[in-house]
Image 1 (cartoon, rainbow, N blue to C red):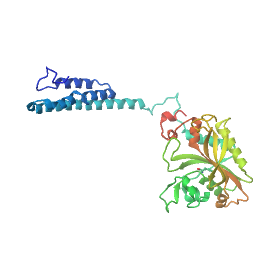
Image 2: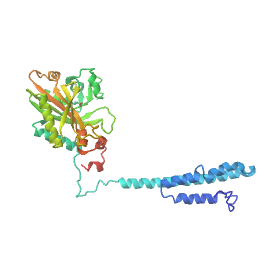
Image 3: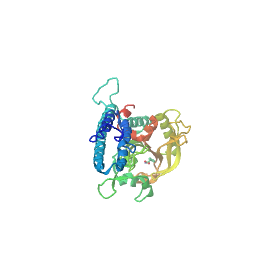
Image 4: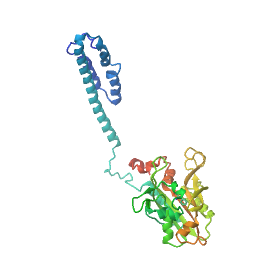
Length: 353
Ligand code: PHE
């Protein structure tokens, strides 16, 4: 197809046939993949135009200028047609994608559920129900907290190394680092104790914030449910028994809990709270790191300094507290392997629950 070989090519239109053929092929490329292949063929290293360019040296000097000009024009014509076709195919592909992903938000289909609570809200409601059934009441507190409630009253004095467990987001309000977005629901323990006298049996669900990059198991904005019991003669066995009763009530028969020693400034002793892995039922799988257990949160016996901070006599009162991640619990219940699904707001995902 090179013009040198084409005996019929005229001197003024040496590339006429090549270009016409190229434009025909470009015009009939059905999609971007085909066009890509064609581009290599027509303009790539082994194409006629590139071969002709390296052949220009052999053209007699008096014809070289004219041959070069014709070649450039031919190449430009092919490139232009290629670009135009690419734009058209991209537009078609985009339209097809938009059409496939389109959601008709106005359509009412009585056979389908039209809308419902978000699954994290559903989980929160169910958790509240389980605890209300066990005699607890539900309380809440503000998401913007002071350093006193989020840390100080919970036995994290200024500069306490355990403050580093929380990647705190501070608000520009008042003196530096005095107001923050709560990093856990534990400050509500303090507010409930300040506002009432024992005995206390309360759960406190709510939104928390940490300076975290979202990934499959972390969200910078997540939910916890806090539990607080203050009464006379409360022991660690009460805590363990309560958590086990909760586990069975929420997850169903066959699910158990276990406690592992841990550290929180506001509880002593402290523990991490694990439940039977929902994916393998305790057999050991990838989701639970082959342990058969999944971590749900922290717990422990209320530290005497926390009682002192709210004016309770630690000799008279005893108690326990716990805090679970609601989002993680939701994901575990539904076998969702990426927490980010919960906040992407894709109706196709949400309507499954
Ligand atoms: N507030 C702790 C956290 O977010 C969890 C916790 C709550 C631990 C109550 C002990 C008691 O990590």
